[in-house]
Length: 151
Image: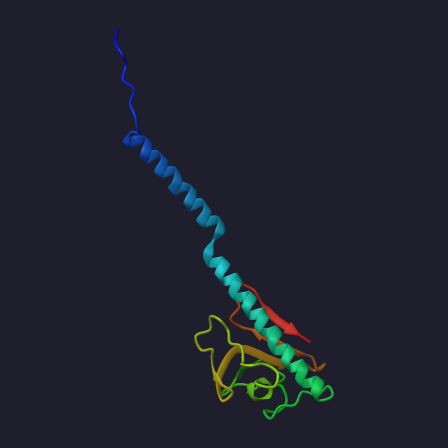
């Protein structure tokens, strides 16, 4: 009577097949989640929140001044102009400390920086239409989005 020995453990081929299946599943998950797209979407959400913050500060300034936006930099430009201390519309001295703590800056614009009201570049643009409505834009929006806020 012969006794067949049962083999214990896995063969090398079985282990390689399981590893290949795990690698395929991980690849599918990474493609499905698309982390680059998720990060870009998060940055776009941040941009929208920043525009909303600045617009709320502008509205607060107007509420304190009987519906007129007052700023030492003059009237809000009619064409889309970047909000910056130099080379743009210098809005920070009109808003920072009274209505917001610091000027928000675009999360992925390498030129966007906040140091103080005299040294900053927000990466966001502002304009005022003929109807008096103020529009804020995020020119660096990603994923083909156009992020704009008008009030």
